[in-house]
Length: 93
Image (cartoon, rainbow, N blue to C red; front, side, top):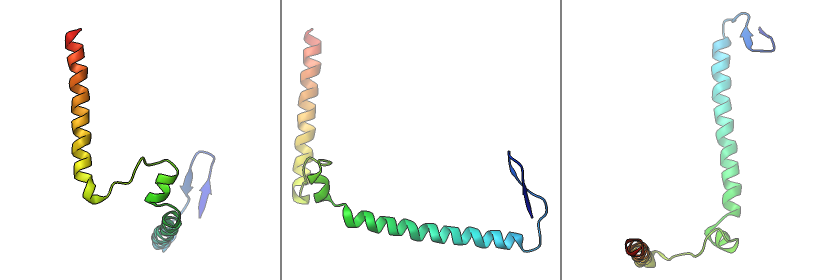
């Protein structure tokens, strides 16, 4: 039996088997939650893709795996050059 006041839930008495029932409820809740998360993930995957992200502006471009290394190297070189210009300008000031 459970009695409640406004500030908390309290167990007035614990019957034999209550712990087993709570454990079973906990396990069922975990199973149902997992199944529902799987359903939501399936719905998400059915709608979202890299190509859709590109269409809606979430991505600037899609880089092919073969082009990734050169792209990263060029990006780092551009960033380093920009930083060297900034530091050089700061040193001249």
